[in-house]
Amino acid sequence: MSKRKIAIIAHLKYPISEPFAGGLEMHTHMLASKLQKKGHDVTLFAAANSATDIKTYPICDATELSNIGTQEAHNEVFFKEHHAYMKLMCTLKRNQFDIVHNNSLHYLPIAMADILPMPVVTTLHTPPFCWLESGFRCASGQNNTVVAISNTTAKMWENILRVDSVIPNGIDLDKFAFSPHWDQSLLNKQQETYVIWYGRIVREKGLHHAIDAARLAQVHLKIAGPIWDEYYYTKEIKPRLGSDTEYLGHVSHEKLAQLIAGARASICTPCWEEPFGLVVVESLSVGVAVAAFARGAMSELLDEKSGALASPNDARSLAQAIKKAMNCNRADCRQRAEEIANADKMISHYERLYEHLIEKKKAKLLSNSINKSQKTRLDQFIQPAHLRVKV
Image (tube, rainbow, N blue to C red; front, top):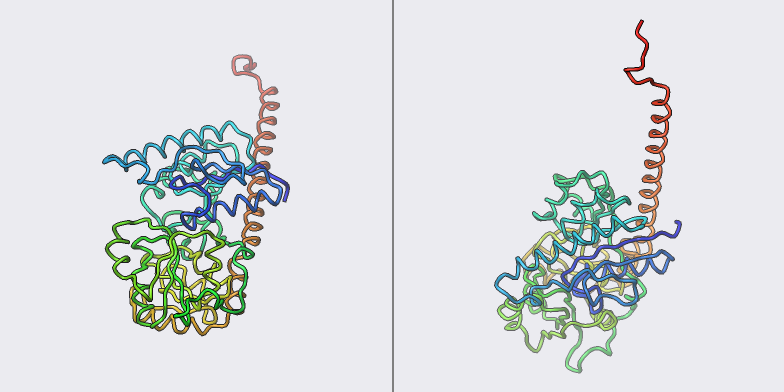
């Protein structure tokens, strides 16, 4: 692919920097970073205090509600993001980017895509919700190519719009290096083994189910991740912690990879239709099998050699899945990750899509220019009505 000038639009809830607030932030950073390393001129439009290793243009401060702290927080966030994205789209209209990749969850980059002279790619990271749906319904769709991160996600959107391509999320397999043996050096003297749960601590991620299931399976559980819902953590998680369940806080990717390497299994407990599941593929990359609720894309990611599925919201079923996952072969897990979540493959897919859209746009502009030129020449040979000779 030719080296291109690429604009990537991030969402604004959190900075795109480590430790990443969640999978979307990690994915956005990796996408920009890997495209940059391949020689493309990448600009990331994101919240302030985002990555310094990528050319970043901050379009506003992070809009997490804890930064607002007023009764009108939701309205203030709404207008702050609305103005930031509107100004950005008007700015992009005047810039010479070859392509714009919308990786946000906001309706305006979708609704305003038609004002841009360059192609726009939008990646769907979530099930449908009202504001994102409204963006697509307002747009003509002529300048918006839609990518879903899984077949499950594409199916969720099929009654609302046409998904043009499915490109699964990838991860940097080198950062989650294969560990052929679980690392016993990470165990306490009293521990024989442990399993891990990590991610955003919010109700829809179902950590309380993981704690209950690990306890039923009689295995030590380590927890890592940012607390996004203080009420949920205080009411449902903190009372469940004990000598067999420890919360380690929000850790770096390096530390996280080490913790996964020491685990006998990883637990994923979505209480919603999970569109993808980076936790799953990161664990598999290290060689750790996954016990997961059978929701969303979980069945796309896991096969019988790399993990076990449990009935949703059922701690006893999950406890059995944990025991099965602990006996999976680590090499099989790594192979599965290489098959379904190689970041380099993902980047190559996006590069081919970019190139196709850029060339298609050029061909359309050339065709329009030729048609306009031919019409101009033809008009020169057609006499105005008032000069025509009557017979």
